Length: 76
Image (cartoon, rainbow, N blue to C red):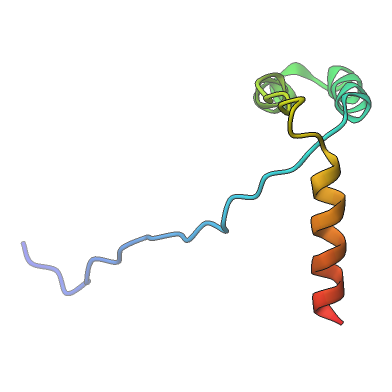
């Protein structure tokens, strides 16, 4: 049986992946909040947060602050 409907490809474009730094205090606060929610709502998020990698101590997080100020100046 032939149909006149054309195949529509469902391509979704995802935004570029970004990398963020999160402090251990922030992570603890987020995990505490999520633990107060129903398990089914948060299990996926808690697993993602549980697999975050630590920043290499040789790199340090101060490079982000230097980079951010440069970007803010460029927007002016």
